[in-house]
Length: 173
Image (cartoon, rainbow, N blue to C red):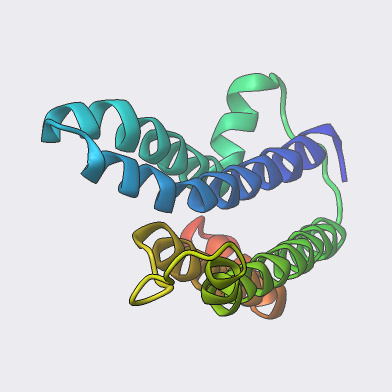
């Protein structure tokens, strides 16, 4: 593994972190965009600042070698491809496990909030709402489930992801 391989791996991890980060912000951005008085205002002020970095993170994740080649001049040293693939696999799995734990904690929070809403209203002497589901809570639950699915895929399907990326780039493993 040389400097280019390590840089490519780190750029790929940055892309994956950006995807998860902005995927978690997407429900609140959608909710805020729909609450704006004008559709264009909501789109430009709330939705676009979340979607543009999300797309950027996805592109960084999918094409780290192109970015690395622009950052680092020179030819690539000959190193065993298996070491690079093993480190890629380990990094993607660790990132997936981290986001599985994060998504699991978020889901427990959202379900607890859903279950305790009526009790909290009753404790303060207010009439409980007809349903504990709010738009924000529903959007956050959906986003957390999508995040958990993506993290599970990243954890369990890392080898398939790496194989697909290498096939797209024309490399044989």
